[in-house]
Amino acid sequence: MKLFEFQPKLFSCLRAYDKATFMSDLMAGIIVGIVALPLAIAFGIASGVTPEKGIITAIIAGLLISVFGGSKVQIGGPTGAFIVIVFGIIQDYGMNGLIIATFMAGIFLILMGVLRVGTIIKYIPYPIIVGFTSGIALTIFTTQIKDLFGLQIAEVPADFVSKWIAYFQHMGSINLWPLLIGIGSILIIVYTPKICKKLPGSLLAIIIMTVVALLLRNYAGITTIETIGDRFTINPNVPTPEVPKITWAVFTELMSPAFVIAMLGAIESLLSAAVADGVIGDKHDSNQELVGQGIANMACSLFGGIPATGAIARTMTNINNGGRTPVAGIVHALVLLLIYFFLMPLAKYIPMSCLAGILVVVSYNMSEWRSFKAILKNPKSDITVLLVTFFLTVIFDLTVAIEVGLLIACLLFMRRMSETTKVSVEKDAIDLNADSDVPYNTENLTIPDGVEVYEINGPYFFGVANRFEEVMNDVGKQPAVRIIRMRKVPFIDSTGVHNLTNLCNKCLKKNIQIVLSGVNGKVLEVLCKSGFNELIGNENICSHITIALDRAKTIVMDKEKQ
Image 1 (tube, rainbow, N blue to C red):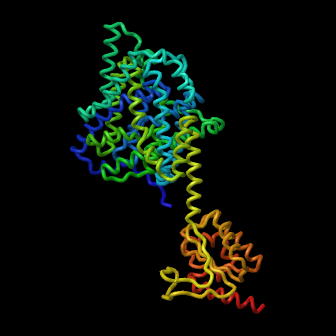
Image 2 (image 1 turned 45 degrees about the horizontal axis):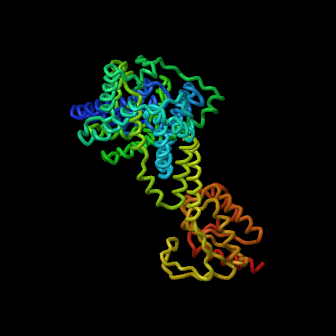
Image 3 (image 1 turned 135 degrees about the vertical axis):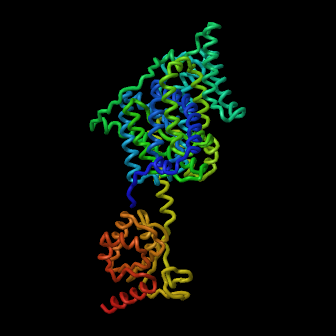
């Protein structure tokens, strides 16, 4: 396996960097920084932390993912996908637990990249991704109902069902003004791109609705519109970095949530990078991207931030505004840093229902309801994975959903793989038309008495040996030699070797000799390393079927003489 090479995209991009590219990256970075501001605040608050934590995460992650990542245009930061898992970790383990879990997730991501797992993660089944993405979207929408409608609920329950029960019980306490602010924010975000695609709708919604809320409070005496300042104390200072103390007990306790953060971050970042590749015609380095994501998450945890990953919406904004190198991502982080230092105190005037409106739009865009609907027309196995992942995400939590979803997908994959492997038996003659393991042209070969020929077509792993025994039992007679043609076996795993060895031992006990035919080089190497060649003898491993049949004839003749 090729070793990992630390080669961030930034380094290669700077070799041929020029002024025109810088100006393009500069404009894109400024626009993306402005777009990222309201989202960072909204994601921070929705995750259960203060608004400045969301911006700090966007600054640090945005900078380090661009510097150390494997994509030219990836923009990193907090995303909606993490809201559910972060909120749950804070409830279960507190803020310190989240910091440690994020730090551990960063380590896991770096290990994934170094071990070159990035190429594997891209093949996670699509129904799983749609299932938990749609589940997260519905959960985010659910968490925003209180602020969107201005409901008077002292403490919102944690689980999905209890939340909706509480909402229906308190529908009589709907506050019209926050609801109008929220609906207004949604309409601004939806219709702004139709008027001007360059204007960030979420930022425009925050500016307009904040001004409206201030005017209503100061000139109309309406004080029922809750703002960020009513709920949080804004502190624009940069926190002092602290390395989290990780004991073995804490490590084992937070292993599961840290793994989920790492997996979710890896999946979302690589999906975002893959989408970006299709637009700019480039190819990202998935393993380098995971290392960059890991470094960013470790650094975010040191400053008390929340988990971060590649953000598809911000990445596309970067591309659409001319960003073509990681410099745009660096500029975006610097813009957020300037906003944090000089404009952060103004954030206290932003209405909570406006942020709720922004997150309602985010949840709709995340829902992938069209993909969800399309998968429901697919085979039952895909539908099962989709619905199980979706309902586990909504009813329980993302940790359970990802773990169970991956388990189900693995089981279904193994079932499909075992179904693709076929075991057939040749009884009287072998049709050699188009046989790749026959060195000369001939139409057929006669199978001598006392010889059975079996063929495996597909990977040889667990389950195949049992099928062998079933096929052999159906034949109904005990031969002197069994030839196993393996010309169409692309690989064999340790379980397959173990099962094949057991099968051969059973045959040898019955005085039946096993002869292999057409084994490819890789499979033969695995068999020899396990000592299988010593079990049946090297002379009984033949390069093609004609030699195998000649060998079988010799064995039959020798047994008849005994």
